[in-house]
Length: 417
Ligand code: AMP
Image 1 (cartoon, helix red, strand yellow):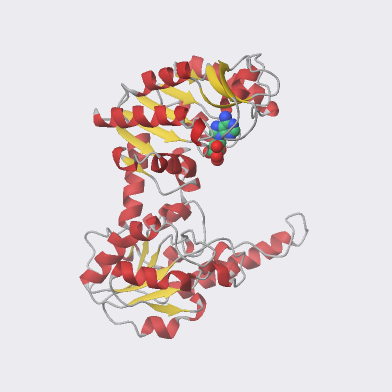
Image 2 (cartoon, rainbow, N blue to C red):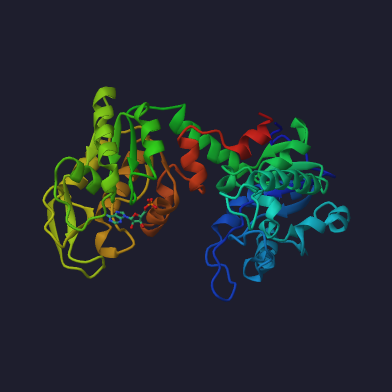
């Protein structure tokens, strides 16, 4: 694998996979351009070296069909403005041969949404997984995917992957395309390098104590990560909706709180494993309960084991917040994924806020803190604290899979593994 910093792009055409899946309003205007800004260091380096750029991305889930609402033409001007140069647009990413061939140093071509072609994701369309013909359809689609990737590769001399958010997918543009470049002509972009380094810091370069904070709504979606982290962390804080599955498993009454009744044994198993491995498991003891799922609900603080009928726990209570902060403050490595309450409602942000404040404080005292996975990022943004933690990851699913210890196809393919 080459390194973007050391590679000289002068006179070269680089095809760069970025994540320009930016949110748009109903008029097709960008509401948050973080992802475009995130890719700029890589794109600008290529242009300033004297290379030309072919930018490719997905947007939304068009499921292999052209859908004007998900056209990247809507963001062409914003990309041009961010780069400070004109951007040409190829209306079909699969037939951009002439436009790519005509590119001169310093010029930029943006390809239309890759996912308008089913080959990008490589999944057969219009056939049920249970259908006996599915296996053959899948094989055929994989072959088409390889051809599609080969065609994309033919546009350029170099491949750069800077789309961490899709690195956990083996799509044509995120992984298969890399097979058509030798090791000296494929590399990770700057954003991707930063993500990989941040994950490495919390998985392989751990300074202790190491505290992981897992929140969000359900145990079931986080179990892989929780199990993986159990071998690594000193403190494991489990918060958010998960709290009530644990409380019920321990014999509590959780009222209307979110609770996965089929995961009670799993919760007990996590408690047992934490004990065996000497992990300090921190669970909520009190909560802010509400009499309806709304910001304006009546509230009361109660024990998580004794939530009255008709009430539901929507946030961590004051004692719990103190316990979370006590575990977080002395930590030297921190991973935070998932809020401690329904932070979207202003009246139920206190638990997440207490965590955010403690993470910021620990970071000031020298901890490395990684915040990632959709909602926790929204959470630190809501509190205006994104700049006060060590790293905010752009990857949701990709980050979680990396932390679970899985190999990400988008990274492995570039590394030539
Ligand atoms: P996840 O996608 O699993 O990370 O969950 C994030 C969501 O969990 C957020 O939208 C939160 O509002 C929600 N959440 C956190 N705590 C609770 C709770 N106590 N009850 C219901 N939802 C919660």
